[in-house]
Image (cartoon, rainbow, N blue to C red; front, side, top):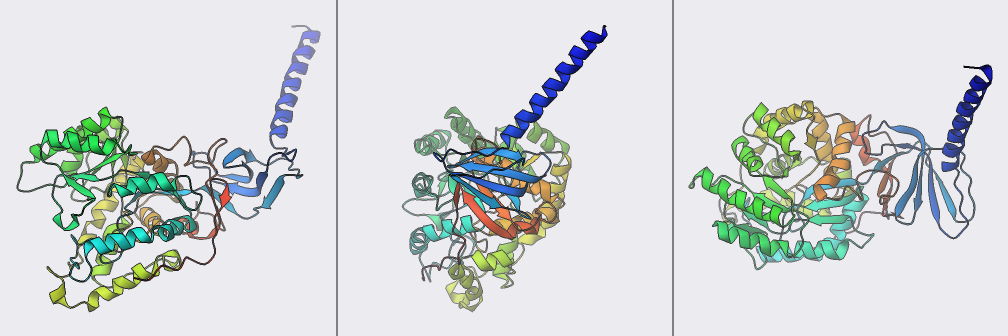
Length: 477
């Protein structure tokens, strides 16, 4: 090759490199003509939830309710219509997502008469009415805890109406909802005019139930696969199969509650998309892992709920700082009152604190799942007795780290993967150009210590800052 050709070739390479640099620089030059309002979150360290490395000295540009651009900062120039927030020393993560809550349950001692029967003191109907009336307060507690999205994993039909009414609000987390749960066992203590649980009895009846729920366009359908010892397991699995097949026929994914290895395998065999509790009776095996992998199933460990039932029943509740600060005080107050109620007013008495006996197996199975690179999401089962709506997610994440997960992976489980549970991964769950601006700014690094998710500086929901003032005062009972 001649020197002239070499020189031309070299010039072309230099020119292309210069063009690349100028293009990259231009992307970081923030300019507004004043016709649009831009918010620039500058000098921020970014965990974007995509699986990429944490980006230091980054910038996030928000326009309206969307992320206009995100990346390493260049020259930032303000101007008319541009607001710059110096976030030096702050850490940005996607809005947290609790992929397992129940809005028809308040988390107080009256929430689950099938667990401890206090209907002689307060009727179940009165408890549900009280829970519904304070819903605006409950929803704000989620936002103030950095939770910008939730999945209601089963409740009365009114929970679907709640989803529809709140998803256009900036004073509420966005909601995905399943509607009534389909169960292999009856829960007569929870009967009401708008029941949260529907018993599966025959294949034809199960198909009708699914069609009835599907009319309300749920984000998913949940099945309670609890072994009924009076029936053959194959018969129960057959009803689960019908529920899943009919749901899939309507284009609806199915989450299954199955805590035994045998029932969990049966649920996977029938086509479950999500498992919403830990397998806690036996160590999971290679067959189970292969089924999860083949079907790309998401596993939600839901570790906190057993801890809190035991603590409430034994009057030994130990809350995190953020739960004490943002948890509903009226709900929390009832936990201590349980031990003062005369035993004759509690049919069956207070259950023994035995649920935590399953924790070693839950932890072991979660470690196996992580080592096998399975998809794991964060869900608290909030609303159950002792698990408060909103801040409980932070204790759940602590427990996942205690079980052996890295904080980085727990953050992925609480953002990107949890968004997949909701079916909203195209809109939320990661900090990327074009996605909704659901952002939490923290005062400390959550990748170094997961407890730093509790050190909240600011919360943004769909481009709007959330009021992080004093925790809302709950209406009295």
